[in-house]
Length: 616
Image 1 (tube, rainbow, N blue to C red):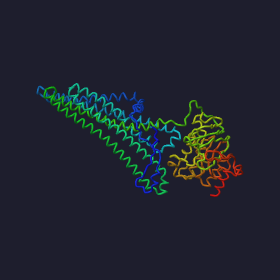
Image 2: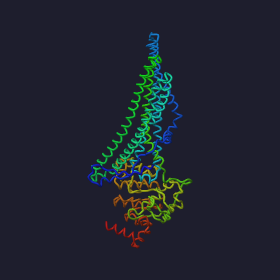
Image 3: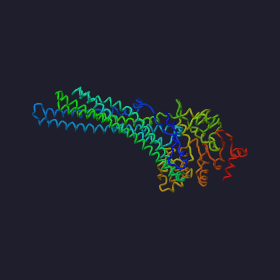
Image 4: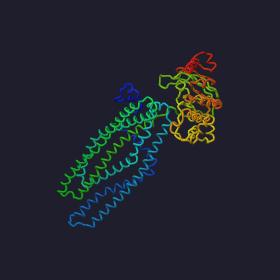
């Protein structure tokens, strides 16, 4: 069931501006309505298999040892009562009492040691499983195509890798083994109760089926409640990410109060969902305790009758009472464990929903690496649709020869960015053919294709780390000298050396300590360090001042030589020297030629140039 089928029209209660109620609209996660999926449950626990042979035998051994010692104690207590404290002979035995007490103490020590070692082992297994699961999820997300991220807010993806994975920790570190312990303990207690007195044993455990029937419906309600909690938390994470990324816009338009009102509304909704799920969760324990209370009443009523008829000793009744107490404890824990399992399954469903998402852009069977290219690019009647029935490109055809610079111009939505996205194969064409040096981009491996292309975007992303690390992101094996040469080539070296640490200056995420122009220069250096055969500049000079742009223009004359380049830009200074200018309008090519040729046509391009001059 697709997670993006629900639209969240998040209304802010108490907002005076009715338009504010419509400003937060995005697709979010859906409460997954499915029965308990045992196949998915097995898939989750398959992550334990690599560690099963190595550590699980020791865990099971410690579990059995701990269970045997625990179940032996009530029997020794019954012996102490019937044989040492109040024997039928009437003569108490202090020596026997001390011997039994010493044995009980020894059993408790063994039980403590076994449980401590078991917990240590299960924590090791649990943390390794969580590590593997989180790694697999992150690696899979890295492979997903752009259209996956187009449909989901970043916070919704973030919550899968953090909150949903974290909610599985208790299940793997304690839950799974505790279930085995409780099941073994229950089985052992039932056998012992029936061996002591089968009539009394059946009378006590008859309440278990009643409790199971009553709790079945409650379990379904609990599962749905925890799914709702996960969905509300995902929305909060999405909004937090959106608010942090857009804090400048929020403050610029003085919308802090409206944002806080909306967050309070979301926060309260999450709290209510949690309270509801938690209340249902807590209701499970009292249900077990009430059922256990009835079992205890039956025990003492019928047990007293058996003692009066000399069918049971006082010591055995005390042992019976201890076993019954130990009987309800694992039942109670199993009930709580089931609730924990429901929480975990709600998270695992969301995790595997992402894991099952197939990349739309992937190597097809038999795809071969793209050899070193010259850079001849051909669009042959290319049609592309972001959504079925809505064409972004309508039969585009053109040739870009190796070493040529191609400028793409046109109004917003004309298809400029779509063309460069198709060259890098961020999306696949709907029909037609796109080739590089005669190789269809769909027939070669994605990695070999993108490794020969560099892209400089208008919104440059700077990672947390040093200036040097951000430039080296274009080619991780580059030497310090090569990094500095790339920076010098785009005239970034001068401003870098003025920073406190030079190339080793630490910058935060998105490079907030740098100006927009400086970030763009770093992105130029990053792209050029990769030494691509195809260079794409997507509005790369839009955020650069005139003085800086002049420096870049000088660098580009050298750097673009021998490379096929595509430039998406509106500035005349950026595109007038291009070998070929393609004018787009609503996904179609309206004009094509160099600057002088298009000016002479007095067509669409000339109109764009005149409009730009009017606003200068």
